[in-house]
Image 1 (tube, rainbow, N blue to C red):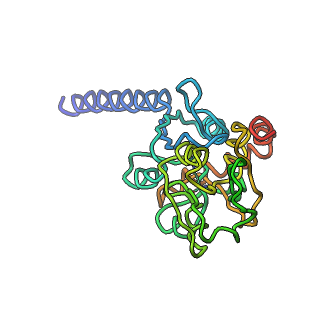
Image 2: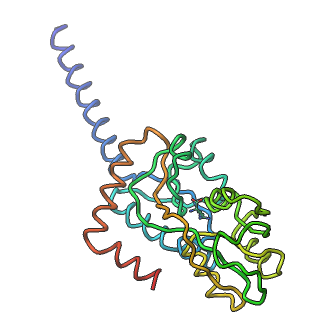
Length: 250
Ligand code: ARG
């Protein structure tokens, strides 16, 4: 009698456990994980605002990657120099913002494989004759950079420059247009983009070193890092990456 009773009990428990595991499984399958993506949206054509929405090359790229690795994404914008601290504080899962891979940053965060190669360029106001033709002409000049951008490192290496730091690209451009600066230094694509939109501005091709952009992750996120790198590879192989390059860099 006792034996029979425990048998029934055992099968009931087994049934309950099975149902429980099964429902867990369904639950896991239905819920696409969410990835919090950080960016700063004053960096066209990589990221910029259009009708209140963050768009651009980086946004399309991360959308494609998310599709492949099976994540939904939620984009959060903030000031550029707040992005990596927010990532480390786990307020973000990844950052995609035309971020240049540097040794200094590598001490704190991990980078994916490179997805774009860029360089720093000089933008000047055509209506002012500053005599600036290259970085060599910078000593004694007022040069604008955006806080936390690699341009700051590049310009800081030149002696005798009066560096002015701005909160965003738009602010630096405004100062250049208002003739408060002799030049600004910024990554090549935004440099070309802003001067194309402003008749009074022009780009000077500089001799600065190449920079590589990569997606940023917190250290130790090896599993997702690998997934992202594999997805990047897939997008390069299946033509989607080239499609995006054509869409944003004519
Ligand atoms: N490539 C530069 C850097 O890593 C500037 C990036 C700025 N990106 C942005 N979305 N505002 O410092």
